[in-house]
Length: 240
Image (cartoon, rainbow, N blue to C red; front, side):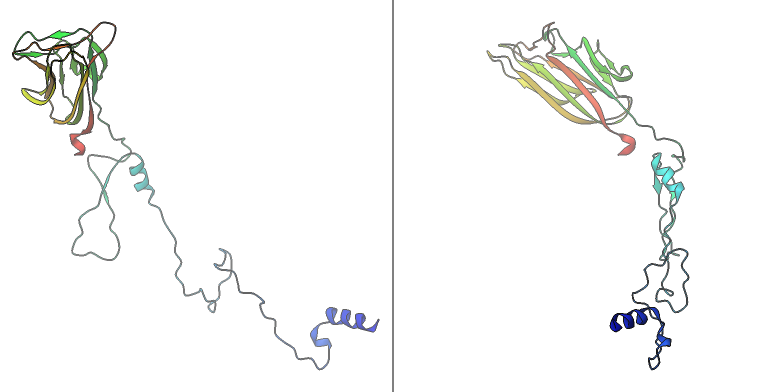
């Protein structure tokens, strides 16, 4: 009974109430939290007093320009270059708040009627319009007139005619850019040609049928679309 009573008194009474026991100062049993909170008191003796505080900042004007498509151009470094970065300048052609304009150009046309060559050089006209942005492709003349300069992807697909030669050129103005050829055969097959061209404003792209000693023809019928000619802008010249 005496032992539990003494233990209870030792827990309740302060250390100074017991004669002969030394007085010890109060110490922290654990290290202070790091980093200190925004409202914590920091004294000169604290270990993090001399450390610099990093405060990140965000330039909202730059974010507005980038989000709306405006490009930043950094000025060239001068002789007074220091360790600090220099601010960029907005391109005069792209003002903040003005969305950038995207350039588009595409066409896809077809021909349902078969065609036999009647001359040494003959343009292939088309009778079916699938896609023709801004009406840049003339179906009757069979020509695409470039209004947005840049790099274009072009493709030509035809169906050969039994026992007849197939000899076509994809033309850039008056110059043959690529050939599509198939020898006469008892079997008719699908033939394709594709390429990329750098077009300037005013350039014309068209398909030419070339006749030699043999009959030159491409097959078609009203029920299906065997002959197609397509092209689209890959990258405008302003971005090259």
